[in-house]
Image (cartoon, rainbow, N blue to C red):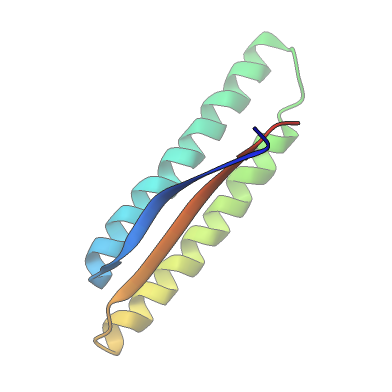
Length: 90
């Protein structure tokens, strides 16, 4: 099996629904990386630079998404969200 694809999100949302969904999803990923970095720091087993970089990238993505949602609200538009997950072996 070389590639597996799963649809995570596929729908049209009101801006407040999109904000809630995406904020929760991204915050969960941020929390995952915070716990991972903390765990590695405590055990002194690995550098947590990757988690630190991902947290910053996710925070930037969240800010961008929040701005997009504000624009949708201002124009009385709904938001289409499509998100697939692709799994491969390394």
